Length: 276
Image (cartoon, rainbow, N blue to C red):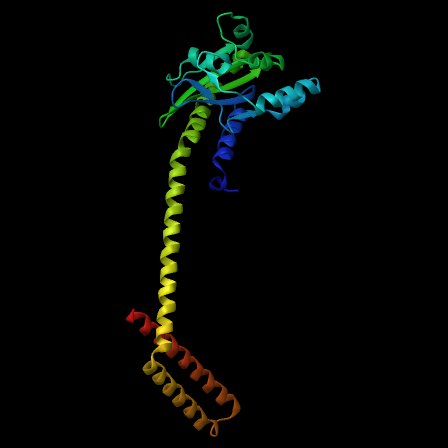
């Protein structure tokens, strides 16, 4: 399947999944984008990925179901509230090339941090995810951040290594661009569709005009009389040589006559079209 055949949601989901697979120790990725009124963060369709290996490794079915629920559903989050809103406020939404790390346990223990309804932050921690990194992006008037989650037991030195942080930054830029470019692609698709419809209308008009031209030729008595006389001459000429030629040579002459007749018909049609 070519990249162009993917829907916008599928292309975004692929970019998010690639980011999770490429980053060291990452088991869960979420994309959060700022609303037009700058009051809340929304996780768009295709903006999440959870490692299937991580989900299957959880010790019981209850935790595995909880992990997939967290991956499938996420309510909008006000700035400064919940996990995404807190990371956006602390890390900043306009600071480029910045990776902001936090321990989820410390966020849960902080009484000044507003918890979102549904205790999503606590539910994430309960399935064994204890470290989160936030990387903001700003591209073509679209702002947001990508959250990279790791196990509570992950090696923090490896997570915060310069090479891994460069990977997080690069992946975030790609995700942000993939999300932001959807508007331009949608406009381009709409323009292409309009051109296609215009071409179909033009072709339809040309076909109708051509049909009318052919009909006018048939209705023109002089044209049809000339055509009848020409055909008669061809028939008489063929009849005249039939007695002098053998069967094979006669067949060849008939083929040539039919070819000339076909060319004559096409010539008449073209001349008739020029009149219109």
